[in-house]
Structure formats: structure tokens, C-alpha cells
Image 1 (cartoon, rainbow, N blue to C red):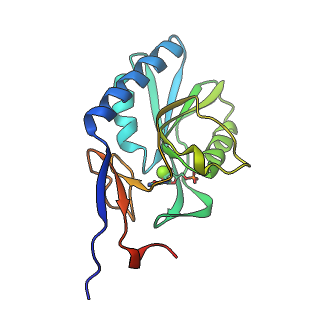
Image 2: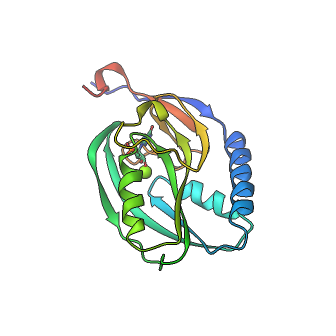
Length: 184
Ligand code: IMP
Ligand code: MG
């Protein structure tokens, strides 16, 4: 018997995302005018957002990536792992961690602490999506910039994956697994 495919329903269309990313870019350009801004994208989910956001920022920036892995299927695995180290010198820079989605807060907490070890002048975070209802009490932080607040639903597209698929969708869609494949 074949498994039924997951269903996708559009939550945020590409033009809605593009307009919001432009706004974030303008806000960041104003706030960081004259500073030495380093954008650090969290791989792999943030690669699409970072590419668009960096081009919406008009002040000079440098760019690097860190790697983090926390999800297995649609369930957070608990302890996030650092899978790629920072290569750019971050000391003395104004750092913005660029995340695709802020969920329990574990990954961002791990990455922000890791980045702080490099003695940057400041560290803040921009996330495209925020699911505040999922935040664990241990990680109560608010991102300095957030694109969209969403409900507790599993989403894919615009960089976000389910088992490494769907990252290339232009829209962000809610992914629903057939009942027999839902996580137990
Ligand atoms: P946290 O550590 O629980 O905050 O999880 C953050 C990471 O989990 C994100 O960087 C994503 O990679 C992944 N994640 C959380 N929610 C979703 C989702 O709805 N779709 C796809 N990935 C997600
Ligand atoms: Mg991610």
C-alpha cells in the first residue's frame, strides 16, 4: 500500500513574504546605519530568507553561516546540535542572527550563546516566522525583528523543510500529514 502524500495549503504567498522582507530590510538599514553589520544565517532553513533580506538591506554588510540541526520529522528533537562553525571574524561587529523560524527557542538560544563567545559588539536576532505559543519557559526571549507571527502549525517552503523537502517552494505552506503518518 502506498502512503498518501502530505497536503499543503498556502499560509503566506510569495508576494506577501517579499513585501514584509523589504520592510524588514528598511528597518534594519535604518537601525544599523554606520555600523559594522554581520548577518549570520542559520543553515539550512534561513538560506532563502537571508538571500532576500541581505539584498533588501542598503547599509554595507558581511555574511556568514552557522549550522544547526534540531528537528526530526515534525518534532523538535530536544538538544540542537551545532553542525557548522562560524568562519567570519565576529569580534567587535554588530551581529544579527538570521533564522527561518523561532519555535521552542532552543536553537536560537544555543546559536546566540555560541556567537557571544566571539565577542561581538552586539548580538540580536531577526526571524522570518515566530511561533510564540511554542516557546519554552526557559527561553523567553523576543526576537528584535520578526516577519510574521504564526500559530502552532508545521510549515514548509521559502527555505523551511519537512525531511529536507519543500525548501524550494516560493510560498510558505502548512504541511499536514495523513493521519497514519502523524507523529505518535
Ligand atoms: P527550536 O529550536 O524549537 O526553536 O526550533 C527551531 C528550528 O526548528 C528552526 O530553525 C527550524 O529549522 C525548525 N522548525 C521549527 N518549526 C518548524 C516548522 O514549522 N517547519 C519547519 N521547520 C521548523
Ligand atoms: Mg533551521
